[in-house]
Image 1 (tube, rainbow, N blue to C red):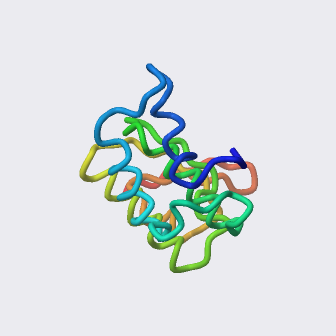
Image 2 (image 1 turned 90 degrees about the horizontal axis):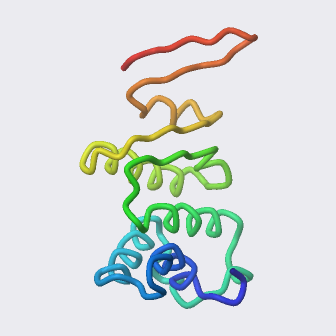
Length: 131
């Protein structure tokens, strides 16, 4: 939402139930934004962000309601190496610590290597590799 700040954009999904963010939502949003390197951009508008920063805001918005399943299509695609690693760390920690199921589609062999099970489609052949 171009008229909203980064923090407000992240909190939008928390408003669905009764129009008010639940207790702790603002703090969780700030913690998640800090984890993806955007803690200093809370009041910025989307037009003031890079493409990679907008992508990280979208990821945090997807995480704010503590989902049990995350479907991520190229979550690190627009990120530099450092930010891609930070986001991968966060996804792996959510899977390990909060038992969040991850389904990640990626061309990044680095990201794929961090997943517990991989499925690869190559030359029309589908293969699975359990880690």
